[in-house]
Image 1 (cartoon, chains in turn brown, cyan):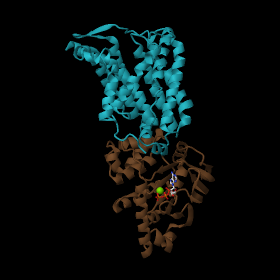
Image 2 (cartoon, each protein chain N blue to C red; image 1 turned 90 degrees about the vertical axis):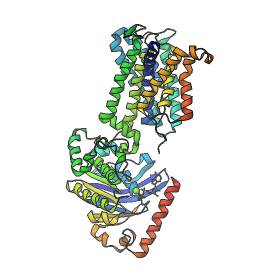
Image 3 (spheres, rainbow over the protein chains, first blue to last red; image 1 turned 180 degrees about the vertical axis):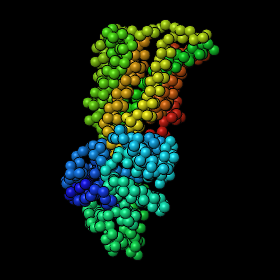
Image 4 (cartoon, rainbow over the protein chains, first blue to last red; image 1 turned 180 degrees about the horizontal axis):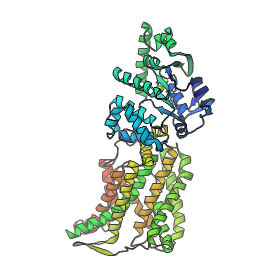
Amino acid sequence: MLDVRNLEVVYDDVMLVLRGVSLTVPRGSIVALLGANGAGKTTLLRALSGLLDVHDGEITKGSITFDGEPIHHLKPAEIVKRGVSQVMEGRRILAELTVEENLRVGGHTAPKDLAANLERVYGLFPVLKRRSKSVAGYLSGGEQQMLAVGRALMAGPKCLLLDEPSLGLAPAMVAQIRDLIVEINKQGTTVLLVEQNATMALAIAGHGYVMETGKIVMDKPAAELLADEDIKEFYLGLGAEGAARSFREVKHYKRRKRWLS
Amino acid sequence: MKGLLETLVRGLGNGSVYALLALGFVIIYKATRVISFAQPALMLAGAVAVSYLVEVTGFWLAVPLAALMIALLALGIERVCIRPMVGRPVFVVAIITLGVDVVVRVVVNAFIGRDVRQMGDPWGFDQVSLGPLVVQQRWLAMFGVTAVLVALLFAFFRYTRYGLAMRAAAYDQETALAQGVSVGAVFAMSWALAGFLAAIAGMFVGTGQGVEQTSWIIALKALPAIILGGLDSLGGAVVGGLTIGIVESLFQSYQGEYAPWLGQNFAVVSPYVVMLLVLLVRPYGLFGTREVERV
Ligand SMILES: Nc1ncnc2c1ncn2[C@@H]1O[C@H](COP(=O)(O)OP(=O)(O)OP(=O)(O)O)[C@@H](O)[C@H]1O
Ligand SMILES: [Mg+2]
């Protein structure tokens, strides 16, 4: 239902970040998109949601179609109305608003279904119902991630884009989020799951893509990816040498991020 | 004691007008991160619109009509002058609002001429007894109408779909966009609301004494109000406005007696003195966010 063809994205008119990405998310599936830091996963999701403008990014080639219709020139609001919602990296909770207010903002494009969607989200996340009047900034990390997912569901999306929902969460919480993604998918929502936690993503996905410096370098059923030696080494951290290397890289990257900010 | 209470009522009355103007500044600032210096012109335009409409429709219809007219005017200004500048440095956009202010006032001045235009309001300088106090009716009207408008405004931001969308966009524009909020619509609504409030403020500025070309200066007192309350706090704008009104009124009543060495009419500059003091001690205001610049 979601089709990306030869997508090229450029930031600031000069930085070519996606170099001809093609990917398909069939209706009803969970598709995993893996890749190291800086591969361009978030950029792809921004392109899908129409949020590149905010970052001075631009689609310079290729197309995105949803249910057969091109959506790459639409504004974010229109894309949400068509049925594509994104949970952005880092949760992006509206910390000053209450939990319920966050959810109502999520339902901005579907005011008629507000009550039904609210009930559905509270059914999926009972903890959000209990804390509906709390200020969202006071929720724990895991609860904030649930709020972020719940907020996206308030628009009643046909396709949900998740950007690293397991980031920074304890293992038990990661498992809980994983099960919720499966449940949401069972209820009929197609899912594109961007993750660095490959074990978690491939455990629930039907199909997986691996991205490296703006290109899709591998594209296989999730079970095959899980068994793939390279994947094991670089993304599951199972190869002895690979684990050490990627760990160092991650640390280095984080340090650099701190200097730059 | 009686004198002090009467002074406070006058302060609350005038302070309400500053609060309405300050709310406009804050609403636009929260939505767009720009301080709009076009508020004085919108205020003046509102007063002048009332002064003309009142002859046709009567006072009570003239006020909402004028406020709607000015809201539309503000909407137009946002669309034509501000929207194309989105993404430019905030400083540049603020300068543009200054230009808009001058242009609008030049046009409005043509409708004022050398006259003092009257609002045709039912209050004038009439007084009313509140128990032992004798106060001007217009102070009570200013305070009462502002209280109702502020309550409506807070309900709007709290309970309505667009009010929540505006708060979301004020907090994190990209997140609001990702939820399908149109940030353009948020910009437009912020200007329309600010225009509406400025027009009501203008009408009150004109009650009793009427408006003339120089009346726009009164709108500048909203600046000390927002500095005091914090640029990004609606509640702060209300408290700041009322406080500035009361301070000014206190100086009007008592400075001649207790501090004559400050010279005549110190009350006129007292709001700005308060502003300077606040800037020295708490530059982000009493209720503002400490770090107003968010990335
Ligand atoms: N706004 C921007 N302007 C310029 N370059 C950007 C911008 N955002 C991202 N980039 C660059 O684009 C590349 C891809 O970034 P992106 O955030 O899409 O990667 P990612 O796969 O999501 O990484 P991560 O796992 O760290 O989230 C990186 O090299 C990054 O530095
Ligand atoms: Mg990312």
